[in-house]
Length: 385
Ligand SMILES: *Cc1c(COP(=O)(O)O)cnc(C)c1O
Image 1 (tube, rainbow, N blue to C red):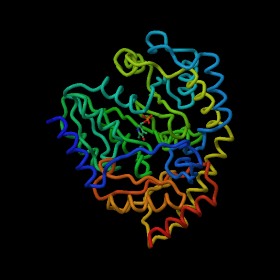
Image 2: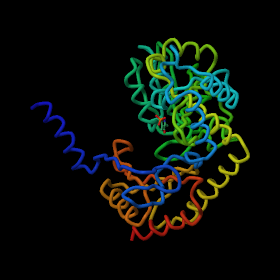
Image 3: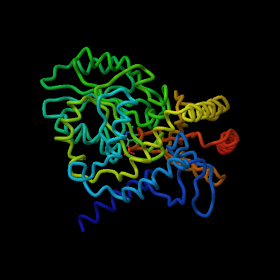
Image 4: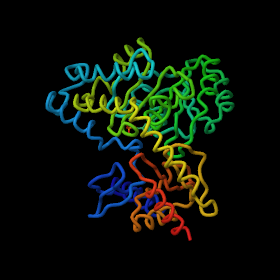
């Protein structure tokens, strides 16, 4: 009875605040189109920024990997689940991003949890950007270290927090490109603040890697910053899934001893590592450059054509273009109207984003065509009248 009340009350509270989350069953959810309800929608809600989820070479690499290695890895990497495909991918990632080592994880969520819980102890302090991803903030609050949050992208607030005496070590945490706002962190300033206080810096570049910087090396490369810990994920620009942590030799050796998400969890299928190698090679190639250029042109087209009387654009030059609408119910209504006109967008509401900032999180991808952007704008402007 008491259990049941807890569950019912929580659901009722979400429903009445218009914050109940629900899933939609799709037939296809990545790329230009989203297929669901026997219909095809223009898809403005996937993170497949470079349109690689259906790339023939990457699909074939996964198929060939499955034929060669089977569909599963057979165990944790510490037992029998670390194959030649995993090793090659780690070496290629390290070489690409200019780090001594890379360690693969099953997801970005797991990588962030693993690194933070393996490194942080009581008396240590994590100083994280206020808008950091849930996987980072949750790991920080689960760890025995103290958590302090600095004002979004504010290096001087970060500095003040770092200057408060701390008997342990300090870890600064931020993202390259922010997932719900699409803006970029001032990484050079943040790195400087961390360095002068002997803090380590962790940058989660889930939305930058593959998409920005020379050869798609991401936000850190673009801003000439080299954090002690760089987290990259493969469910977005790479079009696949999984993640890696880039770090020094000794940190990699340390994580292999103490990161429980690596030790007690089945490693990704080797076939997936093969697909990721194929994805990386596309990202590094001229084809990758062409994909990034097309995406940049689509972003530009969108931003230059939004009617400012109807919507306020965010400070974002990335593929994530949120339109902040404020109220939860209004965001849901707009998303619904857009969907009825063939454009699939997601209303993002608290607690994913701060209260009063419900938004349509529009994502553009290389798989879109210019006329798709025009159609989106037409429907958006119609819906706001
Ligand atoms: C998506 C995301 C993650 C989680 O990565 P998954 O591989 O999807 O688990 C972590 N950090 C940021 C910033 C993200 O946007």
